[in-house]
Each structure stands twice: as structure tokens, then as C-alpha cells.
Length: 359
Image (cartoon, rainbow, N blue to C red):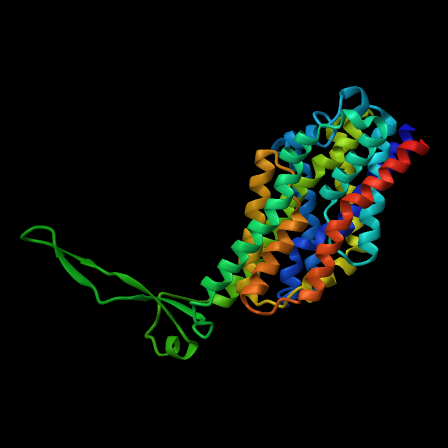
């Protein structure tokens, strides 16, 4: 039983990496800022970094996803309960990954907790705790992300995309009296944002740079921040499967899960990456930066507060909000993703219920 539980936890981590690792870089690949291989490598590095630091930043999530508070400790600590939750979440995530659908591992784990809890002792499931601590953050986060994404796109349209050149120009020096016998020469500078042709006519600017290139670098940085945030937020949930059964200590659990997540993303991320990057909406660099910063801010904030939001829900929400603002959203693809989210919890709950009865 112990060996099987370790295997299931690592298999779930592998599936989590396959479904989730690339999501932060979806806008980077979708806007052709980086190639798929470059984006995948950076996504993996950032995710592993977040996983390794999750022990210090998100201890509250470990306790939540061990089932404590949702069920009596005697049930939550039982190996067959933990194993059933892991089986349900792992199978649900892998089914969605094979279908190219970006679902939430958080959602699948909650479904597993519910199904295993009902099969073990239906009367002991604390549904009030389930709603306040799990379901409310999951439902609110994608709506908030979509609203912020829509607003961000509207605000970005106030800037002319043709004005891509930024120059720092020295103004004429001025004299300032210091005393009756001496003066001090002061040279001021001003920032000029214009088209390339206009910047070419300026006389020896102090500094000149391309706004598009700056946005590209900011875009990549924001994508890395999302993957880092996802590693921080998801790793404790997966580690809870091992920690609750007292099989491996916390540090070793997180290390093993980080490796499994990295391998899953490197091997099987492509199908979900295509859906997120190319099928939901097409966006430019500025829109990608806005969507990524919204996602990273919400996920890192939730991790710090111990709230189990889904990086998937937040990321898709912000991308969809930007796409809606730009009138480029692919509604059939978004509908399929939303339907997969609706199906995640009952599917995982059903598998967990059957697993408890069999075990």
C-alpha cells in the first residue's frame, strides 16, 4: 500500500506537470516571442524553482489538501483514503491532458476528497468547510481574472502601437545662481515616445530603446513568474498525499514531486500548450504581458493567503478576458474548456468513490 501510494502521488505530479507546466508561457509561444522548446525549458526551470520554495511560502496548503478540517483525522490519515484521492486526481488529469484540455489539478483533488469522503463516511464530510475554503476561491478567481484581463486590454488600446521608440533627450542647460560669484549649470532630460522615424531626427539622444523589445523581455519575465507561482501553489497540494500518510518527510516529498512535475511537462505538455497558446485567442506582446501579470499576481497572492486557487482557471480567465476585449476570443474552444472544468469534480469524485470501495 505504501509503495503504491508513493507511485500514485508521483504519477499525479507527472500528470500535473504535463497539464500545467506550460501554462505560464502559453502567451509567449502564442505571440511568437519564443519557440516552443525555448518556452518549455524556461517554464520547467521556473516551475521547479517555485516547487522548491513552496515549503517556505505555502505551508497552509499542505494542511488543507491532506483532508484535515474537511473530514475527521481518522479518515483523512487512512492510507486507503489518501490512495483513492490520488488515483482519482491522477486519472482525471491524465484524461484531460490526452484530450488537450487545460483543467485544474486543484479541482481534481477536491473532487477526489469529496468522493473518497462520501465513500468512507458520508455523514462526516464538512460541506461548509468545503464551500468556504475550497469552492469559493475556485469560483471567484477566474471571474476576477477575466474581468481584469478585459479592463487591461481596454486600457492598452489607449496607446498607439506605432509609437515604439523611446528616447531620453537632453534639454538645453540652464544656469542657477549659487552665489554672487558662481553659477551652476543644470542639464535636464525628457522622455520622448514616438515612431522610429521621429526618433531618428533627434540629435544624439542620451538613451534610446525599443518598447517592443522591452515588452518582450517583460513578457518572458511575467511568464516565468506565473510558472514559479504555480509551482509554489500546486506542490504543497501534491505533497499532502505523501505527508498525510507519514511515508516521506516534507522536504523529500517536495523534491520528488518537483522532479516528477518537471518530467511530465517536458514529455507531455504539447497538446495542452497548443490549446492555451493558439486556440483560445491570438494576442500580441502587450496583451500577453497584461494577462501574465494578472495571473501571477492573483496566484501568488492566493498562495500567500493559503487559498487553493487554480492556476489554470486564473490563466485561462485572464487570457479569455484579454481576448474578449480584443474581440478575438474563440468561443467554441472556451466553451469546451469550461465544460471540462464542470466535469472535473464529478469525474474525480466518482473515481475516488469507486476506488475506496474496491480498496
